[in-house]
Length: 196
Image 1: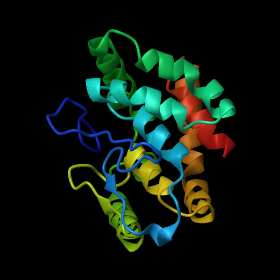
Image 2 (image 1 turned 90 degrees about the horizontal axis):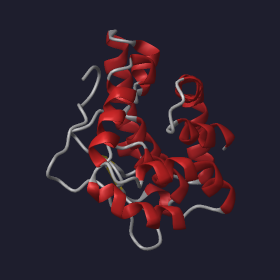
Image 3 (image 1 turned 90 degrees about the vertical axis):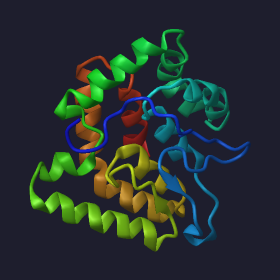
């Protein structure tokens, strides 16, 4: 574990995808968020970047149903990969990919600020942004965790989500490049984000 929480199984359920709209996939509980309907793509992408567990596997068919044909085509390799029978192997791969390779870290500000004090203030500012939009981040996770950030974007109006995504796209593009070069099935999530 470097900059955030380590990704080991816990006993708390982490994934929820209601029938029509994802909510609180990994660490953000929706509040008012301006009264706009959530954008399910961000929540699906958030789910796909969380630590794989048996509960996640149960939500994959529901997540697929929330994607349009183009999104499903791009994400199908990862969806099939995560639906595989060897959960332990998926978990080991996740840890090796995201927790043991700093260049693939799922903590946004680690790529920008490293271990400097600026990272702490950036996280405080991001948490305040979540709260300003009526969202309650999970206190057990750092606010710059990409799945939490994506879940947050999914609860915002499209223009606000796009503006915040644009602020982070240089880090997400770097992750896409590194994961693609490593042949990781997770690269497709960042490809989709870059296409938005």
